[in-house]
Image (cartoon, rainbow, N blue to C red; front, top):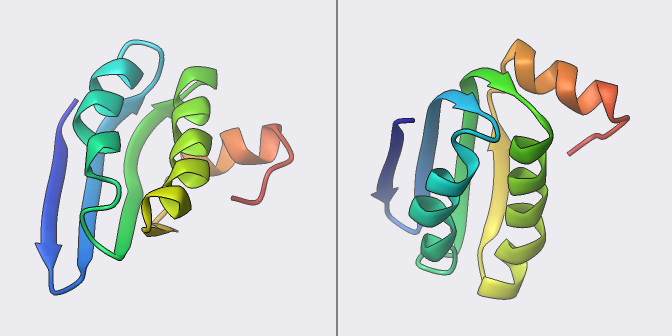
Length: 94
């Protein structure tokens, strides 16, 4: 599960490429969550997510909850079809 993390000025650009599922969530959490708080802003690009399940949704919701506590404003960008379908299935507008 490739995670690309780049910092530009005061914003971290995070790109997840591939699955956001039970098989990848723990690895992604270990790479991504410790970086919350490193910058005031973080943009999470979800356009390349090919599959998303409950574990992926939990990770996403946890990051949205924890980012403000860490001092980071987290913005979701570029939702793929898989992300959109998962959010709609759960009646969420994250």
